[in-house]
Structure formats: C-alpha cells, structure tokens
Image (cartoon, rainbow, N blue to C red):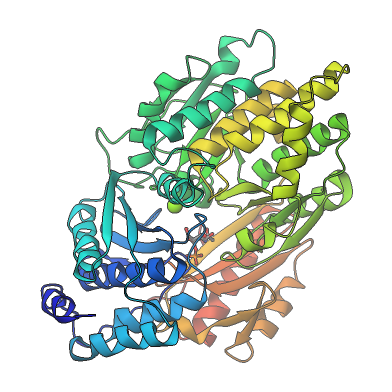
Length: 542
Ligand SMILES: CC(=O)N[C@H]1[C@@H](OP(=O)(O)O)O[C@H](CO)[C@@H](O)[C@@H]1O
Ligand SMILES: [Mg+2]
C-alpha cells in the first residue's frame, strides 16, 4: 500500500503542534478552529474501520447541543451504533500524532488490527448546519480518499439519519432503504399504522416543535408531506433566524428548566424541543397557572415502557421489557419503574446505554436529557412479526396489540436516539392510550433537581466509578459530597467530568428546589476547592 498520498494530503490539514484532544462522550468536540486535522485523520481511521469490519462506516460532523462555534466528529459502526470503545484509543493515537509520525501511527493501527489494505472501504458522511461543517466534512472526504476509500456524502442530515443509513446499508436493505426517502417512508408509514385511535381531534394532532435552529427543523419540514396531516406541526426556531442551540433546543430546556425563546405556548399545548443535531427530544407544557412542566427523557422512557408492557400483556407475549437509565435519571422515575411499572431497570454510564439495552428482549433506554431509543432483540422481532401476521387471531384487542408492537419496531430508529423517530413514537402512544400531556405528566412527580457546570484547570483530575455515580479521584471529594448529601432529605448528588465540554458537571436533587439548589451550590464549592477550580468561586444561582 502506498502512503505518499496520505502524507502529502495530511500536510494540507496540518495539526497545531502540541494540541492534544480527548475522544469524549460522543467523539471529538471542541472549537471548530482546532478540528481540520482531526477531520482528515478521522477520515483515515474510518477507512481502516471499514476495511476491518468489511462494512460501511459513518462519519458525522456535528457538535450536537454545543454552541454554534464548536464542532465535532464521531464514527458510526456498521449497525449504526457508536464506534466500539477499543477504537477510541486509535482515534486519539491518530488525532494527536505529530505530523512527522502520522504514518507510523497509521501503520501501527493497521498492524495491531491485521487490516488487509486490499479490502474495499466505504464511508457515509453527514454534517449538521454549523457554518464550519461544510469545510470540515470536506476534510473528512480528503482523508477517506487519500487512503483509497469511497465516499457517499449525504450532506446536511440529522445525526440519527446518518446512523440509519449506515445500518440500512450494512443490512443489505433489511432495515430499510439507505436514502432520505427511505427514512421518511419507513417511519411515517409505521406512525400512521400506530394511530389506531379513532377520530383524533385537531388538538391531539397539533404539536409545537422547537427545532433548535438546527438540522432537525430542516429535515422535519421535509418529512411533513409523508405524514399526510396526521400530525400538524407548528415549527419554530426553524433556522430562518436565531442561532443554533442559542436559548432554545432540548439541552437548553432541560438544563434551564424553562421553555425555549421564540415560542408562544397556550395552556396545555403539547410542545417538544430537538437539540442541534436532532438526536435528543424533550416534551413540555404550561399549566393553567402558567407553570412550566418538563417531560424529559425519564418521562419519555416511562411512557414508552408502560405502553410496551401493556401491549405485550394484551398480545400475550412473554417478552421482557427493561428500562436502562443513567445517573442523571430523576430518583422519582427510578422508583416508578421499580415500584409501579415493575420492569427491569439498570443504571450505566452515558456512553454505555445502547450496549446495556441490547441485553434484553426489549430495551428502552433514555438519558434524562432526551437522548434514547428502544431496542428489540432479533428473537423479539421474530415473535412480534409472527403474531402480527397471524390472521387466525379472533381477539380484536390481541390482534391490535400485536400490530401496534409491530409498528413500534418500524417507527423507532434502533440505530441511535432519534428526535424525529422518538417524537412519532410518543405521539402514537399518546394517541393509542388516549392520554393528554397532563395525564402523561401525572404518572409520577420529579424530585426537584439541578445541573451545574464548574470550570477546573484540568477536568481529568476527576475520575469516577459505579456508572459515574461516585468519584474516585481527587481524594476527599466523594467524602465531601457524601457529607453534604446527608444534610438534605431525599437528596442525591454526583460529580463527573463532561466528555463534550471542558467543564465538570454537578447533579443534585432533593425534597425541595431550595434544598436542591443549596446542595448543588455546596457541591460546586467542594469541586472548585478540591479539583482545581479556575476563575471566580461558584456563586449561588439565585
Ligand atoms: C448531562 C448530559 O446531558 N450529558 C450529555 C453530554 O455528555 P457529557 O459527557 O455530560 O458532556 O453529551 C453527550 C453526547 O450528546 C450525552 O450523551 C450526555 O448525556
Ligand atoms: Mg445531540
């Protein structure tokens, strides 16, 4: 294999000397100015990954919920999942190699993974709407072609749409057609099938959607014609004006616990927000007192988990439903799953939900921030399809339940959390169960909670264990947190380094918002003092 082209072209995407980047929660993510060489090198790595897996690999250029001036890149593995953790090390090796040892680093991966360089390599590329995404995705293509890979550039798509295309391609179309039309048709047809509710009112069909001034707004606009008016969407923050993720979007609504800018919500109106690359969704509404009610990923997971359990019971199918959460799940949601819904549940780190959910017949996983999906095992798909196609079933309820389970398999994007797909599933479940957004909200009441961010000199000084719920280093920090938690009723708090922003995240919940905010503030001070806080000491929020 000749590497001259790689060496020559890599010089066109030079690495700033001394810059070292970490492969975080969702790939590399930082200010767009520092990413040109990273994109070229991720193009190289994607070619090696494609040769190794003998499958098409995806490369998505996005920084999700981060501010517009950031960007990022992550690789998508053959079944649409995030790239296997063992290749994250290779990503950092290539990304951080100085120019003169890049080829050595590349050949090291080839040797360690015994990659046959004669094997074809096919790469699907997608990008979001950031101003830097066009140039950075071109750098990815340059990397792919320098190593003889073939590029299919999908242009501006949502992150989950790219994951969907990769999964379709590598299942030879079994999962769907690897085209935008294929995505819209599959999801909309399944959605229509799930609307077994008779004569839905216009109110039930109407939904306010905050597109975060991102790609989700553009692609949802494309999808509308496939929905045949069964969902009447009022789209705002739709990229026509306003900045990506700025005072809008799922992350803003979840963290600030208030509606996005630019929208007039009437009482009881169902609203949802996507994040900047449309792989997260949260719902919310305003009650008659004008109070804001958030239905985050935990609430979405419990709605879907309850629905699936009901349908399995009505269909007489012996399949296990489990809900997988992270440490950010509200304590009330976990208690609901355990004491009321009585489904299996487990907690894992923010990067391991998908793999944990694959352990069950039906694995529902959502992070509190609205990133999540539902995974059906092959055995579960087979059992559900067989029953849904059994024309001998006389019992109407049983037949309908089987068909609804079947349409759920097709409406959900099993490759990755998908705001559009999750929205269609929630809308279908609310229609079938005849639930208003208030009735959905009433299934349990969240404990007051608060997320804070603390700037430290080097966020790697904090290491965690037990699904990121307990701190290992620096010494004394976990003991300090434990002491503070003891001061407040029903309280919990944890600290972890962000993998997408250069900050430390603090989460706290307690019996009242006042106690929650006090606990969060004291934990922030402990982090600041014990983990090398920089800048001003953290101040109370209010
Ligand atoms: C508290 C929070 O929302 N963390 C998010 C955020 O990761 P951090 O490592 O916390 O920055 O971005 C990830 C990728 O989008 C997402 O998976 C995760 O849930
Ligand atoms: Mg996102």
